[in-house]
Length: 220
Image (cartoon, rainbow, N blue to C red; front, side):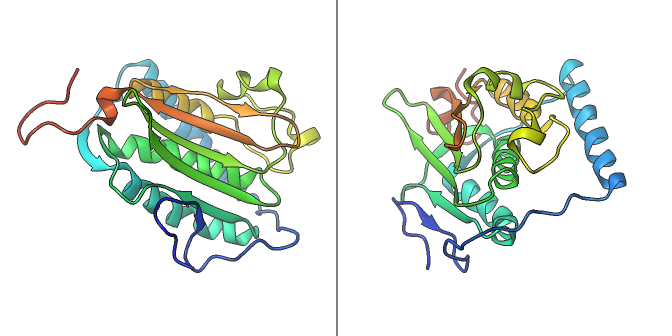
């Protein structure tokens, strides 16, 4: 059914929980090489200070809905439930919409890829201090506590052969971390083996506060 604001709900037209799942097929080698070269180029751009911010005022919840709809076919292909848990009222932010959307898209795609059964959830909220929280949670295989920090490094993954059935280049989370730092925020991980995991993105109050008047500049 249609998601109701203020609570987690599956996306419209998406399947309820199904028994079993289908593994996504790995893309052709040429496509995988193009992905890693593109990601490596972005990392080099970060190192060279060539990544610029384009700040605008927007509704974070609207952006999350767009990302969830975009990723829904991948979740459906594996028989997963993709939930969107946001408030009915707009969650306004002054930050780079495109970059925050890329962070969310990468995190949701990663969660879907490494979750074989159950649910991937996308949530947002603002805390008492005005900070913006966006998190992606899954019911996947989870990650050992000692590996949490390393998965956000470049070309780093936990042992895929032992704990996961997917494959990758270990660059997606590194880019998410770089983008989050560029937005002035922080990105972490909460997980345990066989208990799934959550990746929270936290942006400072200046990035979650109401936008300035037209023609003004974002708060420092």
